[in-house]
Image 1 (cartoon, rainbow, N blue to C red):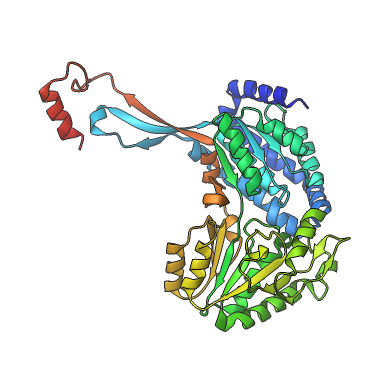
Image 2 (image 1 turned 60 degrees about the vertical axis):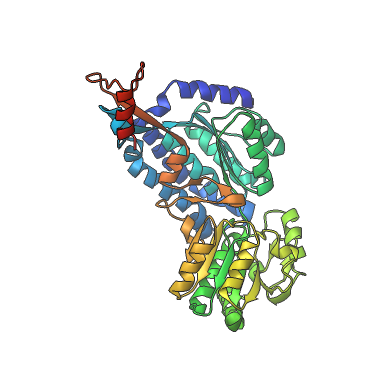
Length: 456
């Protein structure tokens, strides 16, 4: 595939104005839904080969979320696309003001390996709904899923409308050296910086969905048993390879032992005594990440888990007590099934520790104390999160999902996806019946006095 030719063809197709027709967009979304349903078995098999995801987890965390987003966009695209009336200042009388969404044009979507289907297709849905053409770049670390996506898209869409570029770093750089009208990137901070640098050369707007160390605070008022179950769910999903997985726990000293005990019980209920050989337990994506994670196991006291199998690229869900807050495990995003536990004596101490780090993509608070809830929400900056649960805030088309600071910029899902891939044009339509004279030369004192009265 010649990348330059592909992008040129997409630009020509976009300029034909077909994608600006709402009926065309809706038909494309229906076609994508049909394609996913027809390829569902192949997608599940690819996710199993790449990450050892069970069909249940593949549907719950990837395919099902994409289908829900498709349904949402199809249901609301007519309303999203309508001009929106706005108030008009008196000085513009007589006129009307409105905002009209306009697609950006040719969009690049770069996806990571941890949710290789969902994180390719969810932003693609928003780009289609907004009226763009799309170049999709899946991760080379999940080659089976990338290949199925390419095969599916080629079977249902012309390449001048939607195309998939497989490959690794070389293809990434080739794409980033092209001129796109919008770039949507999900992945690590270092590559995110490169994307932003390359985009700046063409003044291309970007969305960056990154990551960070997402804290989980458990205070002394929390429902500890239920909280442990929900924390374990959030950490076990995709073997912890989730950008919004609980990265570490800050727990009140008085309930630390009880919380660890309940979490250990929940891990055993979920995966038994030998999680590594459980048929539904995902694996680490590759040896590089496996070795990185294994190095963390020596940086604290293991409370449960800790066993690993290099041949299977699997690490047991592991809970660790960590006292050295300067250890790498407390400085780097873990992105795996290892959960450090740190105690605190006052909520302010926990908040101070969170403030010592970059803004996280997510924050989770387990509490029944309304004052604690208000305090954390007021004082902590983070992309999004949950109170008394984990992960589920991103599984909604009714709220935007995105980071803040070094955890990302921009948001998507639902209406936020439509907004992300649309330029909102502001239009004033002026009447020809009357033309107030005070803005025109020659300036007179009476004009100035009138203007000063009106423009206050």
